[in-house]
Amino acid sequence: MKNRFNNLTSKEWLPFQKSWFKYTDDYTLYRDNIRFFVKFDLKELPPTVFYYCSNPNNHQTIHAVAQKTKAVLYSESDLDKIDQLQFALFDLRDAFIDDISTASYMEFKNRMLALIYKIKPLLAHRRFIGIFMNQSFQQGAYYPFCWDLAKTIASTFSLKDEKIGCVDEESFTGQELPQFQTMNNMFYALYFRKDENSGSAESFSMFDYFTNNKSQPTNGKITSQFPSWFILKPPPRKKNEILHPAKYPEDLVDKYVGIFTNEGDNVFDPMSGTGSTQLQAIRMGRNGYGIELNEFFCNIANERCREQLTSVLQPKYTNQPEFRILNKDARMVTQGDFPEIDYIITSPPYWDMLNMKGAEYQARRKEKGLQLNYSEDDTDLGNIDDYQRFLDDLVPIYFSLIELLKPGKFMTIVVKNIKKKGKNYPLAWDLAERLQERVILLPESFWLQDDISIAPYGYFNTYVSNTFHHYCLSFQKPLST
Ligand SMILES: C[S@@+](CC[C@H](N)C(=O)[O-])C[C@H]1O[C@@H](n2cnc3c(N)ncnc32)[C@H](O)[C@@H]1O
Image 1 (tube, rainbow, N blue to C red):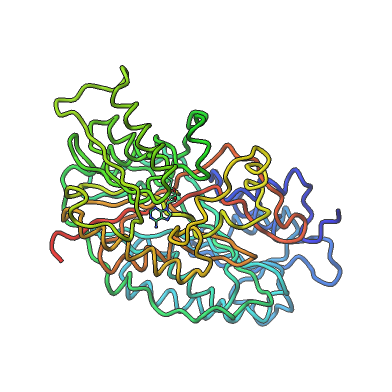
Image 2: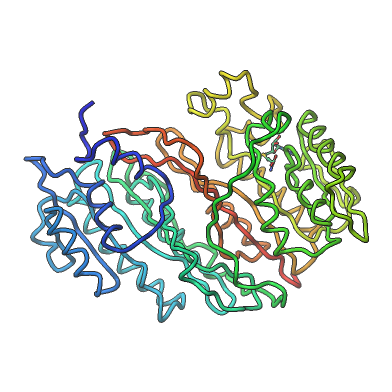
């Protein structure tokens, strides 16, 4: 198969398709991106790259990469000299270190947008823009600048992909703070393409994040020691757990329940699946409550919790933990069903992705005779094929649970941004945006998967990542509404 996109061998191509990477240094970061997004032996299109680095110290590094790779570099001052570009790279990771007020962000954003609009006619068809960037947390308020900028650019270029740059935890000590804060040891690499769909997305106006953004009420127990990313190595799933197509590991629940709750607290999951949330909660001396639509999974969830409570390995607590998982539609939760909630941790169906035929995971499950989706039920959120309708149904479920959550308490939602039929639907960002109406957005963390083989999507033709990162979006209910 002829590589029409770059000059990499298949061995070099595949690792780049993983949607997260361990950041080592800027030289490697620039080099890997330029080598992936530029084809060096095209007569009709020389290896031309535009760059913008918010930190002038990095100019030297990118020039060193250009010299080594033989890329032809252009910067902002050379715009009128450019015929056509193969790739544009923006490194904005240092843009908000000194001053992150909303006004300064807006000014910076407008400057970047003006530059990106100028680049549009110069970029060759089906070629990419890559943007490296951080979010910002300041004085207890969180500013998801990356999501805002990405959604705005998506009305000009096609938003194609994202990668999470993971900076080693060792280099961050983290300072004790009263709020929930992550170590901020990650950055986003966002990828946009100029193609037939560019400019077709709805134009996007300011996120509520900036007008609405509230700082967290102080909570002495929470510290800043929470990592921005973590890799879990869950034990192989037991027979009854494999039956469920998308369970999350108990270790994930462990991390969050450990930081957001105390012994005796009530932990809740409105879409319990196999009961990972409740099982881990009772293991940790918390009560586990929840709902699951599918009767079969609901029975498995209850059975697992029952077994846990009677197991010799169940730690002994002064107050024996209890659990209750009801088989119903989460839309129908009522105040009398459960006691007041101290913490919600949950993961919704990732839209209707389980119904998408052809995905590699689906093929493997089919081979083993395993169920491919959650159910055929119309009330199952995983069976709604319209994206807006899916969000319109999901968000009110969270709103009604927030009513049951004690003021000042937390909620974590595990979710992915989704690529469907070549289009990117930023489900995590959209959910965060809508939920901001009732709860305070906190810095996200990523659960990274490292045990799945990479599928060669877009192989030798264009860039399509394998999404191995899940957003863990955390929110806090304000003390008063
Ligand atoms: C991503 S899975 C959750 C998996 C779970 N965290 C675990 O570890 O097993 C989503 C779950 O939502 C359930 N679900 C879908 N629509 C629902 C609804 N309307 N009410 C309650 N549960 C629903 C599905 O049956 C599925 O088990």
